[in-house]
Image (cartoon, rainbow, N blue to C red; front, side, top):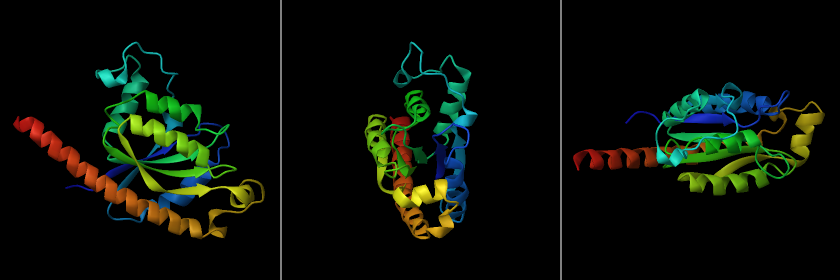
Length: 200
């Protein structure tokens, strides 16, 4: 079985976003692994309108919006996800929630983990996203990275970097260990289900 492909979804699309610092720190840790492949799925590259189509994604069939079809196609290629999750007003970004809503089957039976940031470590955004993802038949991984409090403010306002807080490296590695287990397990399960359907 080929290595699982993990989409690293960047949730913030605003100018000067903190997410770019998170990516600069996280991707070398992720790419050092030899059991998973990673691809950045930046929502800036998928300028989705607010979901407005008559047909629900769960009904299948292509969207009328071509950006949405490109988004769905990329999601379909992935075996799991890491959501780089900002917190806005105690929840996830509107861009991320909208991106979730534009697809359905492409999310199903895949794991997702969170690298979150904000004054409370993005915890409130992650809690909302866990509920959203369960409805999309995504398995949220328990282990997450939460960058908040003095660490977040130090990086945001005082010129500090992730190198000043090396314990986040261990948190990220732990997250990826668990995500890898779920990605392999669910990928095998999807393949088995597909084989059973083709044999029927």
